[in-house]
Length: 219
Length: 250
Image 1: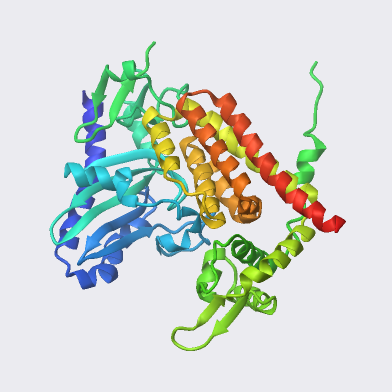
Image 2 (image 1 turned 30 degrees about the vertical axis):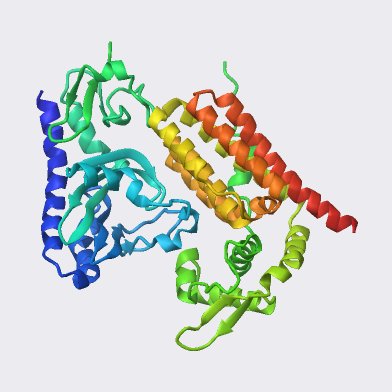
């Protein structure tokens, strides 16, 4: 099915960015990790055409946990003052997030780490970063540094591009996560974060290279 | 013929209602003071620098500086100089906490307290209702498992985990707006609302009610969860108002 392949290519371009970032980070000595990695993702985060609202590296390097996660400039966030520069995610400044006991158990970290493969988490409300509805794309990092490199895509920003592709089908359809949660849909009846019934998922097409599915609406 | 109706007057009035008259300095000091009262900021703990605080609250550095100065005057903070210097929560702060709580409760009206509890109840139980429709079984189970490991044994931990639980519920509603409201409102009123967790018996009951909400979610039956949510906020606001009453009668 052409549309599932086109959607696959669309996501592939983001994974290519992550592969390139991974290669660059793997070549860095641990002591350069902090200073250099923000420069690698700054252009992504300052370009508001690509929907990327957070990106970089989280993991363990030289025996130390590193949280090198950078966020796009924000105008309307309950947690950040507005600005025009990228911000480093500072978990220690999120006192309400103290209850997140171990982010290594969270899906965007644990799944690529245990499977050794790329993973798409969400859609979900990311209350640690930009407090919006996002998809998180992550790939595992192995070797001297362990962890993930990844990026967050804000759903409302990427929705137009995904809709254009879905409209290539001859009827309404939803792009959903492997769990059946709607990312965006050309069927107006699909609500925010709706779950598609498991039996409908059986007649779906896999988006090439991902675990996402395209589900056509019944009648 | 349909009758031409103009928008209700009330809604227009609300749009142009004056903004909070509290100064930003007072708001910053209030947040930090509430956190000390609850033990979220512990005696001896170093606060972030003025610059970091200003960034965090989205206020001018001078505002953060003034708030810290006011708290120093109230005997809550002390300043140490040198490389390891900064603003620290005074070791004596817990002794001052009864007095602090007294002034905090005297300074807030019953109406404001009750309204804060109503608002938190409505956004939380609304999110719970929504989440029963859109969360997966795995997500509901994960939330129950998380709650199994929650710690309600000290007021500060109970506040952290109770607040965190309510936030996770909102996350499962899939609505960024509900999550933002929950974060914003907990930031403003959370530390005050959770003061009842200093009461061991009440903390135990709040933990049970959190469990009832998680079970309601897992069984896809929102009604008992909404009832638990309402009871939870009613107990917490009643506790605060009872303390306020005692102060005013004494």
